[in-house]
Length: 192
Image 1 (cartoon, rainbow, N blue to C red):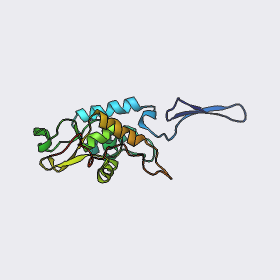
Image 2 (cartoon, rainbow, N blue to C red):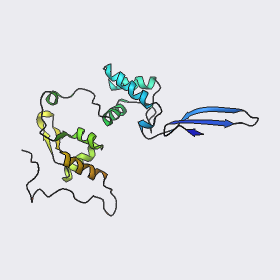
Image 3 (cartoon, rainbow, N blue to C red):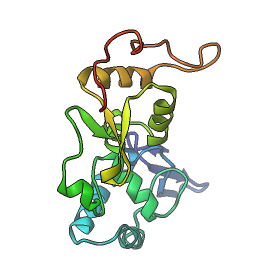
């Protein structure tokens, strides 16, 4: 048995009684898209289908018909799987609301919450939790469909990345505080 690098491709050679040798190519489950032996071909195909203005559902159907498959648990592509795949690679799909596309609602060093999550490489739900516990400074932009805008200059991005990478577990379920108490000093950034 030979595994091709760190990919999903496995070559198996069976030696039978009587001297017959059979060779087979198998696929094994892998954790990431980059481990798929046909990742470059898959990504190229997705970009081609996106350029044809197909919906994510239609792209998923076409990928399944072409014989592609996602890693891990699912054996077929769906619109949801493609949404995550594209978001993780910084590719936006679908139309943005008019309020977002026609006006600039963000101040200097502000990010839409979804863009900040992609930049830091973490789930949006975690950033929502950080908002609730005061680890992230955000404001809701009503004119942009009540989307969240979060302040994050280079120092804040470093702090959030450090917070993301901090180990959690008993007896320290939370990392040590890294933010200055804004009630005691002048805040670096204040929303109107």
